[in-house]
Length: 57
Ligand SMILES: [Zn+2]
Image 1 (cartoon, helix red, strand yellow):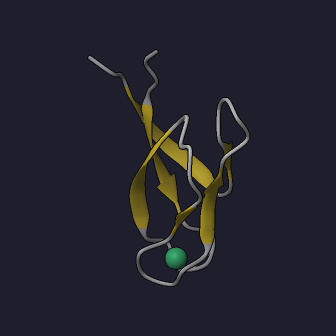
Image 2 (image 1 turned 120 degrees about the vertical axis):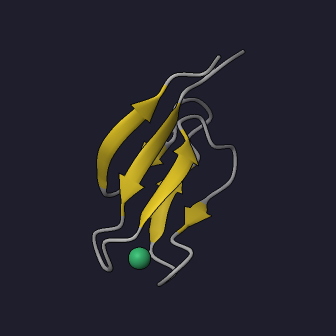
């Protein structure tokens, strides 16, 4: 099973971070700790603005 990576802009500090679209664990902003992705069992629930999608190869 493959998935894309997305670049998410943190709503709190504008840090941009690459997050796996189907993250199995919660992903927090590396700068301020804001939750950026929550696992749902499939595609993660992304919080914040997705600024770029990086296709998996
Ligand atoms: Zn942040």
